Length: 463
View 1 (cartoon, helix red, strand yellow):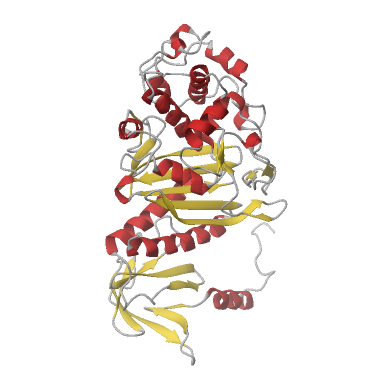
View 2 (view 1 turned 30 degrees about the vertical axis):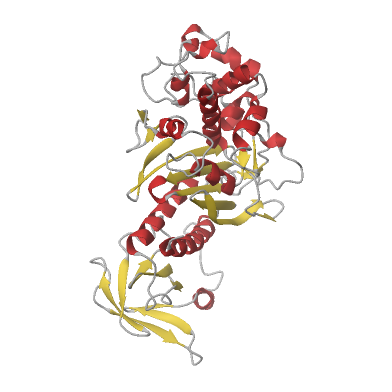
């Protein structure tokens, strides 16, 4: 592993833990794979707020629409065995469909361009007001005409991926869950993944979902263990962040080992449609793609009642990042973006030098936290409150053991002013003077605030 990546992973862990606490999220799990191997995983917060159960990297989450990539991999496996062609009409394999649904191709279903309804006439399965559709219920809805003509535009459809699950069952002659377990999950070596939550052993740790605080002023626990029936192929899988990152990493065309041929992987990643109303966002075959922080990526996201998740694979860096959150207002998508900003910053600047490596740590003022992050021969002043903690970052040149100078900063900051570290009699660093701002440890600032601003002084205007 490159030295810059080791330093980046340490900061990612620290930054994300801060973000989880700041956002008051119940829990968050992250895993990062490099060249197919997990090089970092961590879990923060709780698996269940009611019980107080702590979240660990071994807890399973609903990974929701990440499931689509598993289904697409199953379809590509059948294609490689010449058991189907991607331009086959779906009616070749599944009967009693509406004629206009039956003529849509497998490629159109995989790329969400078949024009089908997204979730049917009652999508209450995603709001816990009804159960997920059974195969018979799904077939009844697929006997109705499409919502729009095929090949008109990108139009997301869980029904379309439910239909792909029926295709797999028709060709394999067995339940979707059995096929995906044997042909996709096990060959990749995923030991913490199951096709549906109902298939988990009772001894397996499972993270419960949570509502947002908005309606009740508090979060409630959403069990999240309900069966997804015929929609399992669109949204049913459960996994850890580590298994999810491993799976998506091996879908990269340049992955060293994979379930699929290079040709199949290239076909999945290839941009088929631009996603309307999103800036530079595209969709292939069960894989979304785009660019963040100058890095091209592909992956997927997921939303299940009580869970939000996101994965991004960066082929040029041979990295895969998965973030899972167990709340309806989970920040997984923006946190994956934040990780990419951090990775790009460390890769661009390089690891800390011997002169700068101990200029680090999180320091506080009344205004919040400030991170000193050494990179190469400079020290960046990071803001862990931001999704891109190094946006417009002040840069410090180290001039002595405990002295430095701000050599780059914004016009409203303190360009050109001195920086110095303060030490105790024992030599421990107890604070930083960043120009005229005194930065101190969290415990010191907290104690000072409690002394200066005791409880009871704060009052609402209408009190």
